[in-house]
Length: 163
Image (cartoon, rainbow, N blue to C red; front, side, top):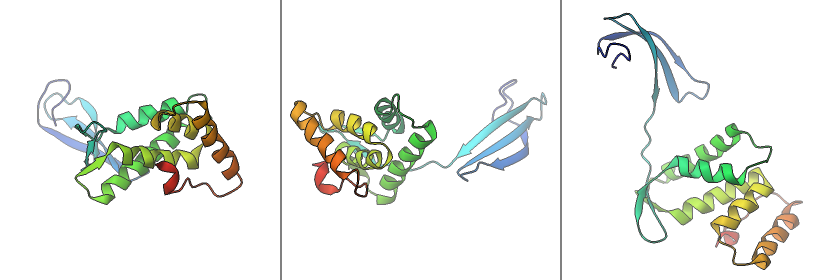
């Protein structure tokens, strides 16, 4: 690891700590040349599938795009950034566990919709309205009526509602 002060590559680890979730290691280091102390973080690099867009293009899986879309849907809602991060962690883990080399953007959107359905009704409807590109108010109202009807039932939009 290169020292941020003098760019020397020689340093020693003074302290290592695991975060609460156990997926990041924080290391305090000291440069052997200038004795400057600095912190580094190690995170497991996940192998995620390529995303096949609706037009056939392929892109790398981009966690931040999902986070940004969910943040927009959750604006002015009582949903913490931690809950959003947890939701995206579940989505990411789901597709990593599948082991596929490629996954459609539609499948990612469907998974996000399911997760939002269980998190917050308003955020779910907001995200679904953009993701599903409702053509008119009637399509939007059908979705709202489904949410209201299912409010008393366990929250799971089921596979048929995502087509």
